[in-house]
Length: 248
Image 1 (cartoon, rainbow, N blue to C red):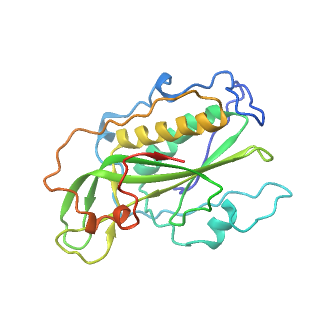
Image 2: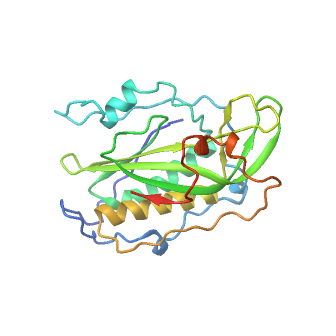
């Protein structure tokens, strides 16, 4: 099981230059057929913590150096415990959909990298929201939230034709235990597909000439029993819960 994914390459699609122009065959996500989900995958895509997830690091391009603040430096010398603890089904949804979308950006090869350490300010940032579920590992209490938060950081290196999308999933504390431990969010497959489609469109807007691509703001139906508690929310604690969506 891999934490890191590299997109597959489709040589049938056109190329892009340094200037942001639309490649033949590349279009915003609203015009791309969504990934087909097996009916059995409509349950939660992540059971966290759990599984024996390992981290596979990307290979350095030939002749490249690992500068401080670069993606390779962050991965190798940042938080060693990139413990998002993705289950196999979680990986299939996140990485499968990412590969399906970003593989269209040939000849650029994009990688999806989970992180706990935000990169420097040279990266573009996109924050998105979703309905997620949590389960306390101490007492077993479960709850849903309409304020599941994910932040993406992305950057394209034209010299190497390599692009990177780093992402962080934010947790919440159990309202019963209040032990200071943030539980990992369990994401529904349709919410994963939604946020990846949104970040795909933001990348297309910056690097591939998409003009005002759509932004999906819908969420999986549901009504949480309790109001959002900012004191127990990791994103709130870091000042990231005020807006539902941001793009910089």
